[in-house]
Image 1 (cartoon, one colour):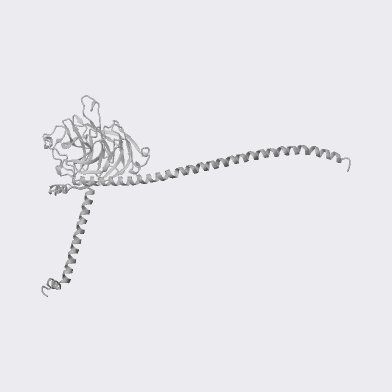
Image 2 (spheres, helix red, strand yellow):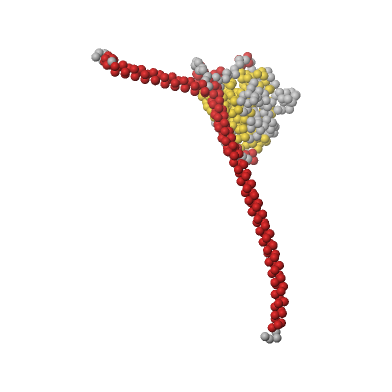
Amino acid sequence: MGPSTPLLLVVFLSWTGPLQGQQHHLVEYMERRLAALEERLAQCQDQSSRHAAELRDFKNKMLPLLEVAEKEREALRTEADTISGRVDRLEREVDYLETQNPALPCVELDEKVTGGPGVKGKGRRNEKYDMVTDCGYTISQVRSMKILKRFGGPSGLWTKDPLGPAEKIYVLDGTQNDTAFVFPRLRDFTLAMAARKASRIRVPFPWVGTGQLVYGGFLYYARRPPGGPGGGGELENTLQLIKFHLTNRTVVDSSVFPAEKLIPPYGLTVDTYIDLAADEEGLWAVYATQDDDRHLCLAKLDPQTLDTEQQWDTPCPRENAEAAFVICGTLYVVYNTRPASRARIQCSFDASGTLAPERAALSYFPRRYGAHASLRYNPRERQLYAWDDGYQIVYKLEMRKKEEEIVLGLQMTPPQPEIKLGHQEEEEEEEKKKKKKKKKKKKKKKKKKKKEEEEKNPTLTCLHTHGTC
């Protein structure tokens, strides 16, 4: 070896000493980290096993509870099915009772109905109405019902213009408001966010009640003038009719309704003082006054000038009335109860005198226990647009000729059959079946006896067949 070899060994040993110390510290650090990881893994395994055990215990506890809940659910389902079956059966029995025992017509003879001199400036009173059209139909029954949606408050009005576009919908929410919603189509009205897509029309004076009417591109409604009902002054208990142009959004005409001491015509709809209606004959108004606070009054209006052409004192009572409409010159009044039950058309008044009140058919509305805030008849569609506690409903009507109603009314009514409920009918049918079975058994026994006698005495067969043997 040369003289430089010892020097290299010294340098090498000086380098390797610190490196070995660093490696030792690194190994110790790694061992500590691995031990910590192993400890954490052991803790996770312990926790997972503990959670698994708790889950098994919870599952074992819940299984019997689930079985009990399933049994209770099945019991509730069967009970609900039986209750719904009973309800359907009761409704069928109620329908049967209604068809067998219809409610008596609300007809009360009154001196005012028989006539009297007309009042100046108020049109002829209690005179026979001369039909302008050849409309001669009356309601046979309210055939069906369709609930479209719920829009607005409990009281309001929705309708179509019978002389305007067939698709446009007008909605007037509330009994004292000044903004009407207009929808281009019925489909737009049925959408969830319909109010955002509707156009709004604001009238200069707020309306009163739910007696508004859209007719021929105009909105007809009653407003409370200064000093109107409840306001005191010269116009106490009077209302002003407004004719509002829906396109120009201007008031075309106005007139004070020629009736003093107005009161709500419907006992169950106290916010309405004048209920406007339209049919094939034109514009009508239903109202009541303090002079005869028991019955409704009917007026024929001129849609151009708002003048009152004729007036009638009808025999239809105000008590329990909730709405009315006019078809072919005949007023139909809808009655209900409080709390609300099943509405019915129980009184009618034909201004032309063609159909007597006692001859008119009494119709029940389809099963819905609500209160009609308004009813609007569309002569183009022969449908009723109803506002029932915030729900917008369409009723389809079935019509017949008034002459047919009169002929049917003049026929002698057959004796009413005994009213039998569903379970009574089933019992009687079972008894009839048993009687038939007994008769068949008796006949079979008689035939067997005859055959046995003929076999024993063949001469009898000769006598029966040929007369002689």
